Length: 177
Image (tube, rainbow, N blue to C red; front, top):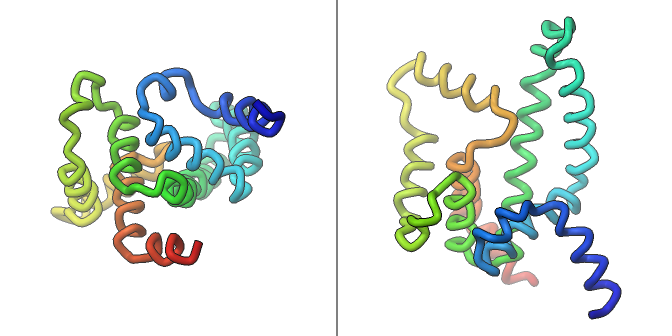
């Protein structure tokens, strides 16, 4: 093994949890590694660390009022950075079904159900989540639920990735390479 391979493996392994490595296929690991490398290439990691270092120590302090003003924009950027990383993950694995299957598994699908993954249903759930609101109150609850979360919901990420893939942008980039 050459030194670059050793360095790359040492650099990537801390990013992936052992459960991730155990539960995903090699193709799905391409998506996950690409996703994490996407964060690094886009320069997200230093901002992620800054956000965590700034937010976490004062989140439960007497500065809660100030944090409530800062929390939403910080967490919103934190979540949106995953959309860019997902696109890079897809460019690495080069298979939308692999990317979506990875997201389904990471959303918590039990291992015993891995043989029955239904991507179309997951995409339909993502589209329904984005499009269906029965009223103003539902919209407000959805907005607050999403924006209070530190990590984007995988169904939202899948919907964003599917929309980007379906827009033709993925094919345009792949054909240029």
